[in-house]
Length: 193
Image (cartoon, rainbow, N blue to C red; front, side, top):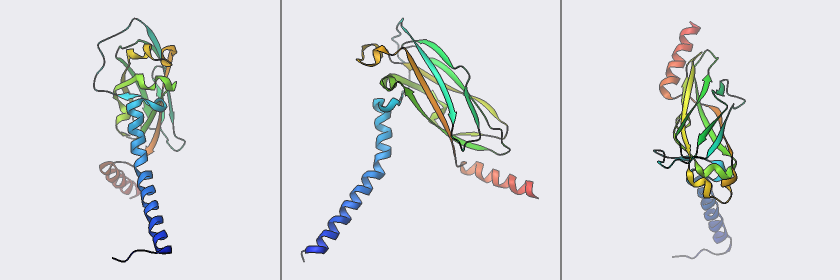
């Protein structure tokens, strides 16, 4: 087997470096999302199957914030802007979304919790943000989120001083699922004729 020399060897090494760096950058987004969900890093709330059975007498205020991306035509707001919950208690809040346009629109919500130190203790059991949402023309819906604040927050060095947590959502427009996209195109063709 012939050994690579000088410039050929350098080119092969550079190509390998580029491939490794490309692979790492491709894998970094899903890895970062997983890391944030598991650790609560960056204010990312946890996602769990059920609540806890240890409820404290101590209360915490949860504020709700809603916004839409500048390109998203929906109206989106919390039904209640804040609520007091006992730490460990499973609570239910609603957000309202409205599609004022004459065509269906799909959306996906990103979310976070502030202060960041509370992110690892704020857990969602069910949430509209776990799936994409499609609103028909003129449709108005209330979307629920079921959550609790983990009692371990009171033992955390930083988070135990948190008295108010803000749960924020931002909706972004996404492509319609295939079935909706075909129906929308068919309706547009019918309306043109």
